[in-house]
Image 1: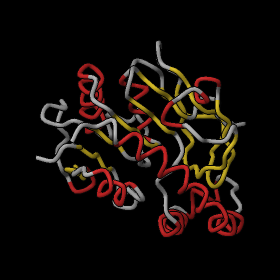
Image 2: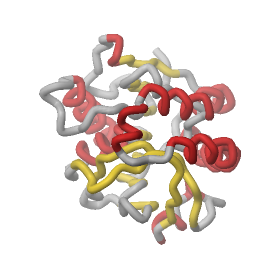
Image 3: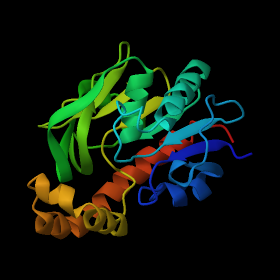
Length: 234
């Protein structure tokens, strides 16, 4: 058994730059690929860390995607055991739900490159040491969440105030994508072209901005993600 459990919802949304950081920090992972029919364990027993990746489904679609209920139970067990957890996009929404908050459709979609701003809690967060007050990230979501009771919000954007939550001492939910690579962006735009057009997003602008923003997002991503991985005992 590896030390970190990863939940992957769709083939196109993998670990991105996290893969290379695992080697640096000495961690190994077991990946549950729900898109291939892998079963989701309902508790974190045997693992020292949990990473839940993104996906197109909504937390409120448990009748259509029954594995989401198992994931919520899994995250609840990680929270109770104080096991470090990182949720990205859908994973952040699942963390919010597991911690008792509402997840729902937002008034618009963020697809592409957007600025987020640190909150006072974000400026004091150890994982974000060295982050600027405002930074540009890659987004792909239309759903959002409330901040769970007792949790803190670390970043906000103009469209969605809750972008990065910390629950307890070591569970983090990031609405945006610090792990994304340039090939991942290109693949997402190709696979989800209809959604992008329907949302009124300028695809050309996203493509043009990607190579300009990737170096900076990777610097920030490697910094934050390495600090997170070092919370997990080897």
